[in-house]
Image (tube, rainbow, N blue to C red; front, top):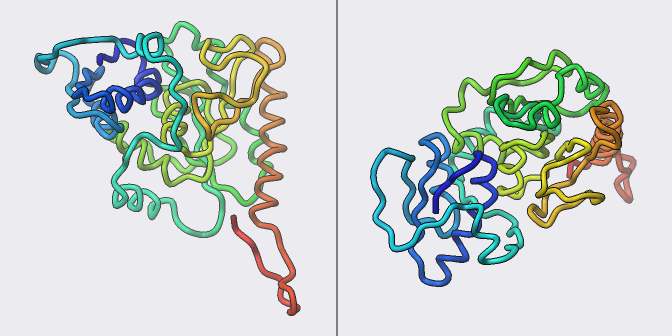
Length: 266
């Protein structure tokens, strides 16, 4: 299986390795490069991963990743099909801290060279209303070049991330990811982490039309533009949903039989 398109495509369609392995195949992956290779090696059903042009693979059959759905049909998304080392995830969690706030990752722009990047990426200033939400910590998941968000304040650990395996360990420790249609959205979905995906009016084919969920990722929720280039209503909807989520997570409840007010987290 060879990765002929973007990083997000590789993360999405590597799930088919498990189906082939169940049929008795030894699944070999030719990844775009070493940055994604270490992560794809953690996918269920994968035996060997090499970076493109690093060496030759000896295989009986070959197929590009995105041709697999045409042959095998739709493969429902398992809760998580990327298996991470628990110790690595715990290390990244400890860097986030444990002060009771929700840790929410943000990715606001995709790869600039993408042919549809003008529609899918969002200018940083549109995210300023997120600063109105309390009880949350925002973490930058912007690994591709983009103008930085000024408000809300972001915890930026991107300089500590060396490859997609590190990115995955960071994402796995978050309460929620909010992302445009980029590799970060696919990464969260493949890990089973709750992810809100912000979609343009004319979205990529995989997201369909007129629905807020997707069969590709059970943990994903889709927020769609109602008109081209109008991101303000989308962000306003996200802010309202975040406020409700924060209030629910930090709801004060009266413990039965006592006069004590306690906080319920989760």
